[in-house]
Image (cartoon, rainbow, N blue to C red; front, side):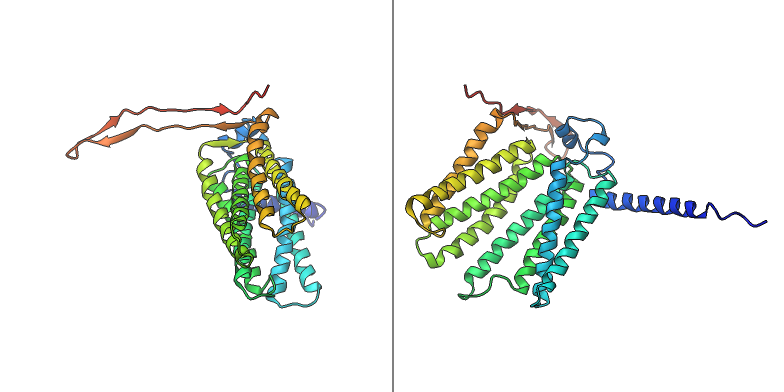
Length: 342
């Protein structure tokens, strides 16, 4: 009697499902560096949940990741178009659409697996943007130093932009794998980097009288400011635990201040966007907006915690003897910047 084959399709489907689930687990483990199974304390603290199942990505993080996937696809299309010296719109649209669809599909597939940990999407988006911003500043400087009338994009400059975004994406994966954290800290890194670079560029432009040198000085100051912002945010990140809402308030204050300052000067004087006064007032408005957000954000219920600690050390006795403990003061300070403005 021949064995029945009626259950073969069901067994094949079950085998395929198990293989797909295994592939997802391997891919997710590679991306998150093992942090998926045991989210970090900062990540759990940001959601107020102790269970790993609750420490998943937020809707805000997922929306940013989808937008970044589409933008990365567009950048890939531009890069391929410039490398191939294409003249047809299809040589730009097809690679861009394909890369955007691939990125969005991968994001949806990984999210369907239910294993995006809290903070990883924000780290990927933030670090990819930082890499792109730094590369864009150096592309700006290259264009400023080039001959008049030179096009902005070339194969080399498009490669630099794409490589900057890709390197930032890889750094985001590595950074989260080594030190998982909530979305607030990653967003804070991106915010400090962006506004430090913008403030440096606007200030340098406002202080350069010669219009022929303005782009050159501003682009160099922006690139240096962005890189300094990365270092500054990394240093501050050792002590600060900002909420995502607090960082968004800083971004909104800086944007609104720069628009009001620069836009007010434009409307009042009729000057152009390249005028020194426009850049000076935009820089002043940006700084004022950041300061105002620092004061008003806690009033809106968006806290930021500050903590510091000192670890006891041991010193070796003279003559190479046994180590002896050195008495030190251990300090831990947790502040919620809750200001009463009444």
